[in-house]
Length: 281
Ligand code: CU1
Ligand code: CU1
Image 1 (cartoon, helix red, strand yellow):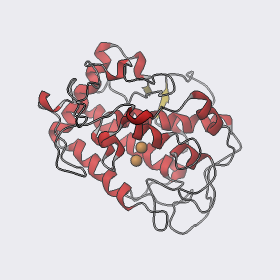
Image 2 (cartoon, protein in one colour):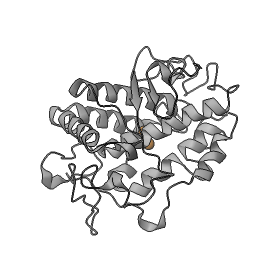
Image 3 (cartoon, protein in one colour):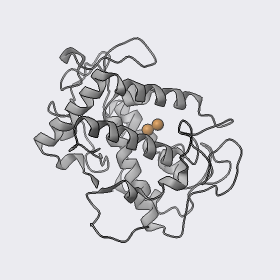
Image 4 (cartoon, protein in one colour):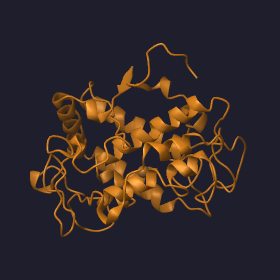
């Protein structure tokens, strides 16, 4: 069984195994196919039309499935690798070990945010951005620029306390857990982390930055945490609803996967915070 670990607890060997597997997927072209998929979904997801990956109820199961496919590709490269999660309520500064040169790198050029150290620096020769909103081939970040702060534990807890998964009109104006976690309303959790990082992470081609996976692994974990704290609540909408994926609706780009298939993460992996043998949901 796959165990997803807090990135702050990874050993140097585990960090190297993760970044090496990511670099290998980049080399073979698999990585950029993932970036392109995300880019096309984020670009077409609309408040007033079909929405699958973002701005709607299936934001959480869509990314869960997307991460599972990426993790499976990492494991084809190295069986020991799983997706680490980044608890941005705890590791909340540009000097966190996440941004050290032995992991994701953290030094950015002031002029344009080009990442200058670590395995994903353009000069290291193994990380050219090919799918994106402009032609600049290098990874960019502006960690914490402009006075943006990462969400706090208190802000997360307030959202985890919301008992209703989602609500009409099932878009970025909805009240409810999903939209507050996605971050279009309230204190803005998930969206604000993309903005705090900046560069490609603040664009539709956000998976160009490998931190994307760790950010979303944590968002995914918060969904599991919400399920545990709100055992009577479930995915909504339960029945057919225009433009959005209901509990038993098929989620593009997959042709046989529904949100119902993805509600219990323990079919696929556990988190290092969960005790083995704990009851299944
Ligand atoms: Cu996304
Ligand atoms: Cu995201």
